Figure 1 (cartoon, rainbow, N blue to C red):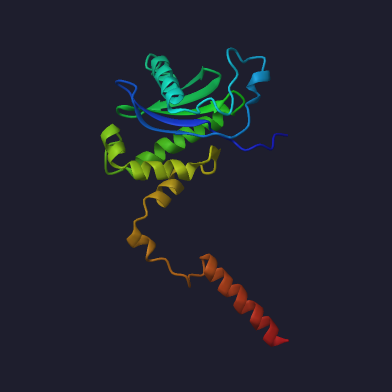
Figure 2 (tube, one colour):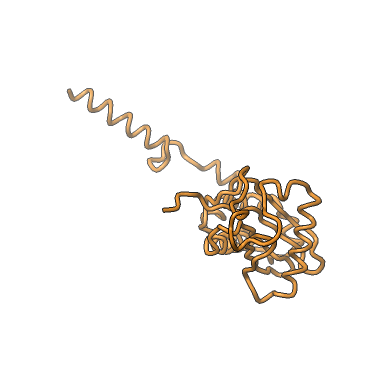
Length: 200
């Protein structure tokens, strides 16, 4: 039984026309990949520091764009000892990169979650490069709500969009006496506890 967490090595948004970076987040799990011992692995074995420098990241992104710009109908490839799932938006490509051992269906789920969450967050706009750059804070928050330090923590796009799109005015309406909040539950427990003591 596999008790490991689902992880992502990188999440990349590239411009479709020239392969330039729009947004990229690389995650370092701190442990070497076991792909080095995999019989399927070819070429140099990936390590925890394979994307250590911005130069390495840019080289990887450029090679990835070169490979996938011809394969727009595909959505999953094995590339440079990584499983890569990708999807195109208007003029941007969204890539989720995982290790060879990672579950392709989970990587695809993360890709679809982020795609839908970004579309939900930017619903009033068309999801294109200019809009993503103008709303980079919301896009980065949506990514952080889905992936934390490379670990997949949320796969529901509606939940991510609702967490990201709350405005400060909406947050001010939260009542701490609401029975559905944590403090409301603590108040209820406290009241029940003291009511039980007083009845004895």
